[in-house]
Length: 369
Ligand code: UD1
Ligand code: UDP
Image (cartoon, rainbow, N blue to C red):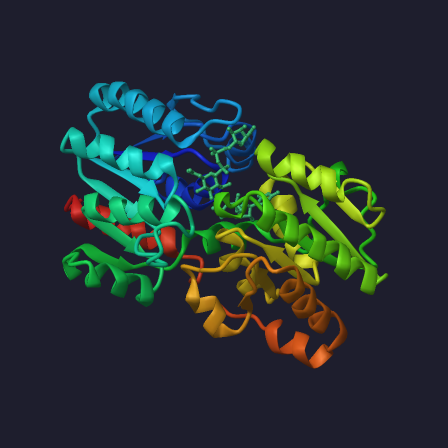
C-alpha cells in the first residue's frame, strides 16, 4: 500500500484534480489523501461538492484580500504539520498557483517525491502571468514526476534539462472533467434565471493579477462598445470573488441592462453555459483549454499565453487588453459569419478525457504496483 497526497487550493486546481482524485481513489492498493489549502473558499467548496470530494485536511488559509506573502507563509506552515503527520509516499500538485509551488516546496523540504500535474506550460515572461510563470517553473525544478498535457509542454521541460524519462504526455485532466460535466439535458440553477438564450451570449471572466487596474478597465469599456454595436447580444459575467475584480466590474458594468453580473457559477452550470454561448472573452487559463473542445471561439484578454496549441488550432485568439483591439475583433466575429465559422471549430489539442487514467497508471508503475 502506498500513500498519495493530492494537494490543491483554488477553483481551477480543484476542477482539474477532481478526475485524478477519483481515478486514484478507485485503486485499492493506493491510499489517497486529499489536502486542500482552501486558498479559495467558496469557489473551492463549489467544486468539492459537485465532485463529492471530502478532504482529510483543510488548511482553511483564505483571508479577504490576501497577498502573495500571506498565501506563502500559511501554506508552508500548514503543510509542515500535515506532511509530518501523514508522511505520504508521493505528493501531487497541480499547475501554477501559490498553493502548487509552496505545496511542492514543503514536500521537498521533507524529501517527499512530488508529481506535477499540468507540467511544462511556459510563457518565458516572469511577470506574465504573474506569479504563475515562476510558480510553475520552480515547481518543475522540484518535481520528480512531470505530467505534461501536450508535446509542447513536454519539450519545455526537456529544454530545462528535466530528464525525459520523468516526463509523460498525458493530455489535460480538464478535458476529463469537462466531458463528465457537459450534458445537453443540463438544467441551470436559478442564478441563470433571466438569461435570454435567444440572444447571442458573450461569456466573460476576468481575474489575472497583471490585468488589475487600467487594463481591466479597458476590457470592460470594450464590452460596453460591443453591446452598443450589437443589440442582440447579452454579456453573462460570473464575477470572480476577488474584491479587486468585483469592485471594478460592478462599478463599470453594474448598471447595463444587457450585462448580467452574477456570482461564480458552479462548474456544471458554467461548462454548460459555455456550451450555449456564442463567444468567450476571458483572461482565464482553463477556458483556453475547455472552449476549443466545445468549438467556442475565445478572445484571450492577455498579452501572453502558455497555451499556444489552441491558438494554432485557430479556436483561440490572443487579443490583449486594448479596448480597440478587443472591440474590433469581437465585432468582426459578430458580424462576419465566415470569420466566426473559421474559429468555431472543435479542436482537441488538450486531450481525449483520459488524462487522469494515464496519470493513475504512471503512478502505479512508479510504485511498481
Ligand atoms: C488565484 C491564483 C491564480 C489562479 C486563480 C484562479 C495565486 C497567487 N493565484 O488567484 O493563479 O489562476 O486563483 O481563480 O495562486 N476570494 C473569495 N472567495 C473565494 C476565492 C477568492 O473571497 O472563494 C477572494 C478573497 O478576498 C481572496 C481573493 O479573492 O483574498 C484573492 O484570492 P487568491 O487566491 O489570492 O487570488 P486569485 O486572484 O483568486
Ligand atoms: N469556472 C467555473 N465557474 C465560473 C467561472 C469559471 O466553474 O463561474 C471554471 C472554468 O470552467 C474553468 C475554471 O473555472 O475550468 C477556470 O478558473 P479561473 O478562470 O478562476 O482560473 P484559471 O484557469 O485562469 O487558473
